[in-house]
Image (cartoon, rainbow, N blue to C red; front, side, top):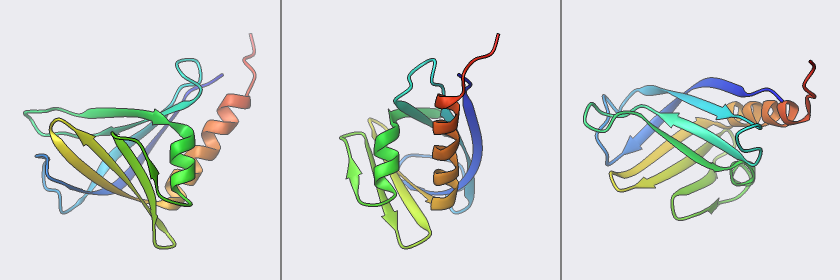
Length: 122
């Protein structure tokens, strides 16, 4: 099975320190079925003090959150209007609320399901 890595732009609103939170930021969406076929990872940039942070959570949570609010103590996902989705991350450093274009997350999820179905050729 092959890993999926997709770069995206997102808008972040946070109480943690990050550079210029008024602009879109680069975000990395990752899925590695060999590492954990049920999880996805989202990498967020960080401040100089905290560095970047990668969140790992259920792929099902991300999928369900595009239709209705769902979440855990650390990650919550919900639709925001017709074309956007919000992913909220909680840590000891604060809360980061990241707004995505829903199509970006749906494209990523489609790629993860294709990657999980692709047989490895040797």
